[in-house]
Length: 579
Image (cartoon, rainbow, N blue to C red; front, top):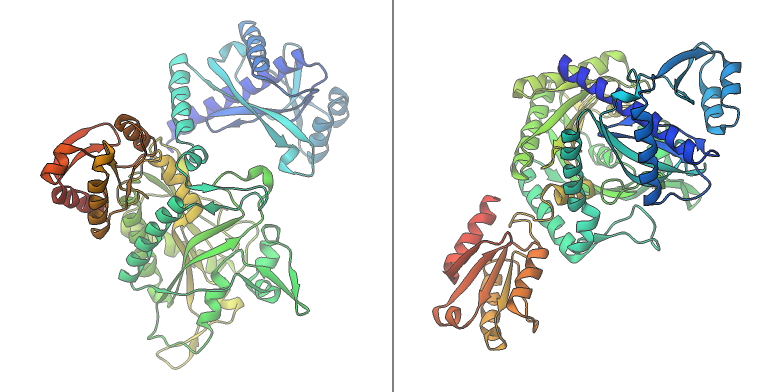
């Protein structure tokens, strides 16, 4: 972001953080016994967590908004004050969550409060000068939130809101929220019969229904085809492995909090895999490797399992079991930059195919908790930066956000509403080859260390499907649609002809259904539109007589009668070109 953009974001964050304090003031005026959590500015808004005597209702939000408007009209100044630890404890003596926060502040750091009117809060700031500077705001919703994100701690009530300098900006944002709600992949997943999650099986575990499985299969087949074209080979690795493997890889040391507890099998401890990489290393180490074999590009649609707290699980986008479109490249150091360039080109191709025209690229550097020497981190980071410069990819540096074993490129996809989603990632790893003592025989006859590139060009199938559902608003392009055409006979006497058309379309590799219900034609068309089926082929007496179909599109356009073979050519071209 340029300087002006950063300044605008800082000002907007201060506005929203101030609005959260005004909301807390309003809540306390209505519920004097309220216990206060935290109230930060977040992307597109703010929230505040409360421990309240009863659950909030929509009427409560209206009342809180009314109290907030009173405070804004009062134009109360935000007054900052630094206090000592004893004064802070006295000020918030009846607020257990605030006292816990005070206890966590390091002894050498100042403790500051902000006061507007008769309300004082523990806060670092910044804030606007006074409550009167708050422009247009709206309280949006309530939700449960564990204190400090820990499901072992109390469940608080979180109120979400947003604020903007002008009413026009607020209304524009609310319209975007309305459209985002219409595109919510959890709603569309149920409406379109794509996937489900069941309490009986456990949260964060996805059940793919036939239509969802067909979309996923289509994506996976395309993924495999494009990888074969680029010299990749496919492997499969087990879902569990001995704990010792994860100790060697460093995951048990660096990533244990995201792994499930070991299970005992034959007096040995095993763990379900959170990553695919150690399995690929086992295949590499199965025999000696020569420099002539490298690079080796091995891909796997590998399902992994990671512990996520129940409070952060979210539809397809935050789950406990997911399938990565994973691959690992084992190469010589002199091949590294060319291999990264090849992955970047594949990422660009994939994003274009799925109609992501905009995305942000970030280079994440060495985190505080990391393995390996500074020298190899610098070499790996330079290789990633050099590949992006060679391909002309603009990027931002994200300091300290690399994984424990190496730096990475992260691609944030922008969907149709301009929202960002975590997508492809490319990671350079000099550490695992050392930890697993991986080698290849060089041209000099000596053993040398390969470099390992971890990469995913879609991310995970679950998150990518969630992103696609919202990006397309459920209206998948024809090549991805689980049902590409529905045949709608006007009357029962047209059903045999509809079945003949079905057989011909299936022969042409089109995914098709016949709506044989005894409903009126208009009702069938409307239902097909709700199911977002690309083509509706209406058949009656005229179509039977001329070996035709009357073609309608899901957006309502009526293309009129077409010869059946002409329609097949039209659909096949659209599928072939992935439009």
